[in-house]
Length: 53
Image (cartoon, rainbow, N blue to C red; front, side, top):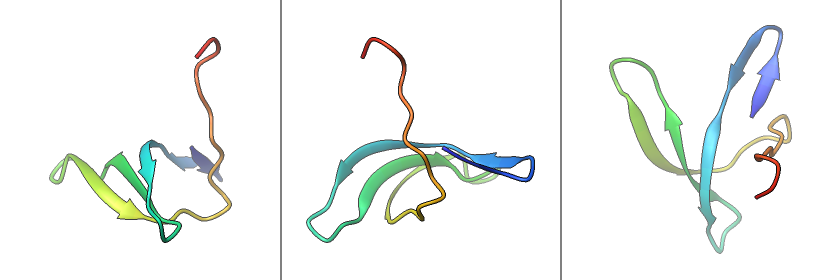
């Protein structure tokens, strides 16, 4: 999850690659929908998860 100045973005982590990138799902907008991407994230993102998992 990333949140700054009233704006934010959430991705769902799937797995990591051997090169330090991550496979993730994210909503790219109404016209694009949900996509699966291999990318890296900045340190502005914070990992969260539901309690009890």
